[in-house]
Length: 417
Ligand code: PLP
Image 1 (tube, rainbow, N blue to C red):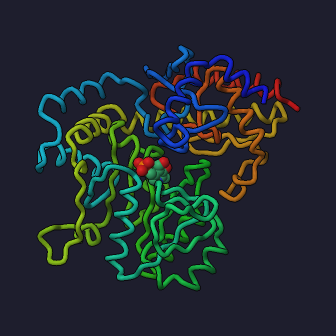
Image 2 (cartoon, rainbow, N blue to C red):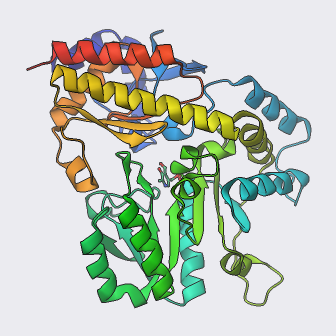
Image 3 (cartoon, protein in one colour):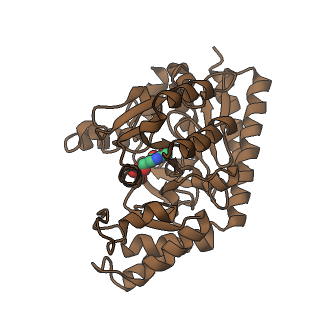
């Protein structure tokens, strides 16, 4: 309560704007995940790693737009690519040159035979699931409790009323024996297994045993294995599947790959993707007004090939690994009830020690402590997800990481009890 009061006292403009927004959007909100109490921060600008809110307060941005903001804010090369797109006219309503170059770059980078673009990661997953259903002639899908594959494919708490009405069987993430038993029961009925190789919501890596079980059994049952790499593709120069050495049949993408523009893509083995070839009899339909929009195609190409080079990817993930280990050592030293999970540039701080290993464990943490930590970091000038999630951008420096550790130490000492 006192943390909320302190937050509100310093942010009269955000508070007034929250009330104004509520007149035109339910709860003043159009992205549920950004809402937090007592009212959400309202940002007005971003430059590099710094966000400025409507009250003129500045924050180091460790949220990185849930991994989509990989390039930092207002990156000069991104702005130049936007200007280039504007110069040739937006959305020509036709095939054009930029989509070929971008598709080539995405296929090469992430080891795909063929790719198709969408407007969001949600759509990419919906299309990949549709392709798997058409390819196998089956309808059931194995997903995992707690997974988020998009606004209509969310399995936190077992699912939501707005989910797409697929025939979903839910397994438990990282549960090898349980998943094996489930596959024994219904493996032959499955069109697809869809899984994040690292559970993005809480940054928990899938174990090698779990992910290779899925690979092995999907092949055995003639089921399409889909890796949702919407967040994780930043974790290795050729994506996270390649980094793990496990190749799914289809991969889905989103977030930063479009250079910060609206973006999604799905792709993988030619035999499945060719079903979308319009010259084939019975081809699968896949329209979408903005699928090949010039802005995303041009900016995505520049960002993927000129900014997030394989070397930049390795450097960013090394920085993330250093930060995660540093924070965990700090929590150890302080005897704090906190622990980090993650891999490379994706990190989550959970109010639980030892670290969570599954989405179920992440659901059982002390939510009050989580909110206190979030508000304490905001007061220190750090922005991250309320649930403790962070995705480093290329603009974040080692000094920013040091400063975050300092702020966490002060927050822990202040709220010890
Ligand atoms: N899949 C994962 C793993 C995600 O994290 C997200 C977004 O947070 C999505 C899919 C959905 O992507 P989008 O928000 O672009 O629809």
